[in-house]
Image (cartoon, rainbow, N blue to C red; front, side, top):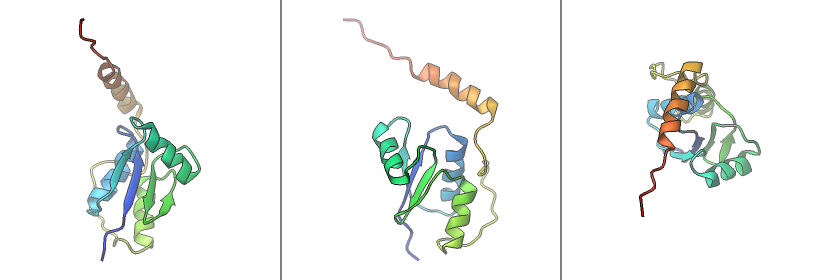
Length: 121
């Protein structure tokens, strides 16, 4: 069976996005990982295609799954016959976002990552 063309509009650090990535890896599905945080044009494309602003959004062979969890993507792929059910655990939650602790860690790392050093003239 040919692999579907998949475009996933995801956030770099989002628990929901991690769940979608885990499902893609579980089924060995190649996909374009479009960063909607660091590339505003990708976010605009996602909004135009999905007609809403929430993520993740996953486009499979031209069909848009808007504001979905990894579990929802997996169920849709199984229902449409793209993959067969696999009970193998993926190691991350596929049905929820980040915990408060994960959000705090992300905020701390983001504040350090956004420091820019300007060379002296």
